[in-house]
Structure formats: structure tokens, C-alpha cells
Amino acid sequence: MNWLAVSIVVFMILESLNILTLYFAPSSKKGNGIGIFNAYELSKTQPEVHALVRYLINWVAGTKLIFVALLLVILLTGSQDTRLYAVLALIASIASFYWRLYPAIKTMDRQGLISPKGYSNTLGWLIAIFIGVFVVALALFAFAPK
Image (cartoon, rainbow, N blue to C red):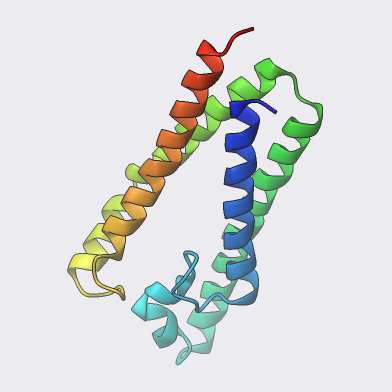
């Protein structure tokens, strides 16, 4: 197994844990559970809003499940070129977090809408580390003896 495959497997494991959290313990404040948002508990007081929130949580979990399933197919059947392009696609898609999601969660954090305070910075670093691991895997793959 080369560095590209290892980085994909690690990402799949972490995403799978997040999927389990979203499906079975969405109110958790660990594993990127939705419980970090103070509005999650508040949504429970309004059944229509909470139904929408639950739907969106399951939508996100389902989308992550699609990613993991596709990565598994790439690992099992894909060539080295396919894995290389998959890692490049992962870097680009994960980096999109900084376009819309990071500014939104940063604003909510500043407004005291997230617990624990400062979680946006933790999440920002976590996403940067994901990207960094993929970049390192690309470099190790590129310079590995062939």
C-alpha cells in the first residue's frame, strides 16, 4: 500500500466515525457532532425546525457516506493514477470548507452560538491538517522510488 492509499484509508476511517456520530449521536460535541451548535437544542423546542435540522444532519451524513463508498471503490479497483486524482479531488473539495463554512462557523463562534468557544479554530486546524496530510502523501508518492 502506498502513501496515497494510506492517506485515503485514514480519511475514510475518520469520516466513517463522523458518519456514525451524525447518524447515532448527532447531539454529541465530539467527533464533529452537531451538539456544538447551541441552536441544536433550541431547535428541539420547535418541531418543524427540529425536523428540518434532523433532515439536514442525515443529508450531510449520507453525503459523507457516498464519499467513503466512492473512496472504497477507488481503493479496491482504481489505478495509481485514479488514486492520485482522487487525492487531488479530496484536497480541492475539502479546501472548499474555507470558502463558505469556515467564515460562517467563525462568525457563529464570535457571537457565542457555539460551545465550546473557539471550536471554529479547532475545526479550521483539523481541516488544514487533513489537507496537509494529503499534500504530504502526494509528495511522498511523487518522490517514492518507482
